[in-house]
Image (tube, rainbow, N blue to C red; front, side, top):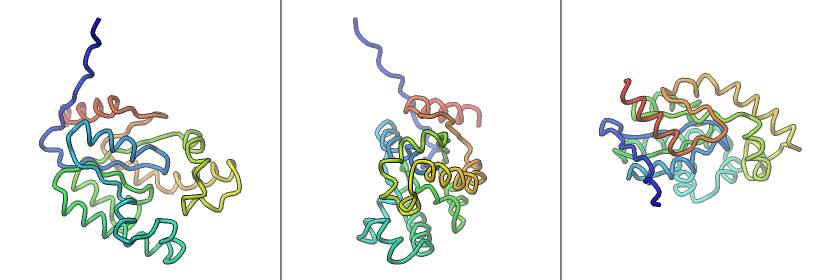
Length: 188
């Protein structure tokens, strides 16, 4: 017996870019790579692009220059990326939409998707790697990580909720997100 082929969703030509936003650990990079393959688009991770341009890690940038410097580089890089790539899937950093009018850039240059992952799941995903993330590195334990994530989410929620598409699940599968995108374009 042959297995049915997976449902393929075409991205409408009007969708020039897909921007993924959400908390650290939400799966923006992983899902973004899968969406790029599925839609035949280039993929960029904004943090990785900043690292490449700066020739140092995000942690090093934070330690040497501070968060404000990083946020300005993030804003500059975002604007360069959308000016350079007419079509792409972009995974943003967790704080990207919250600074320097970046949310406006995201909303006006592509379709923005918010990956809303419960804090408990974020803690599970980030616990082992928190030390490598500048805004989470100094936290003593899982309880501290959870508190910080809840506070951060509360501060960012209004920005995230501006996205026209939200995948509110512990794990947003490729197919689930493709269905949300297809539904968005058939009802928009």
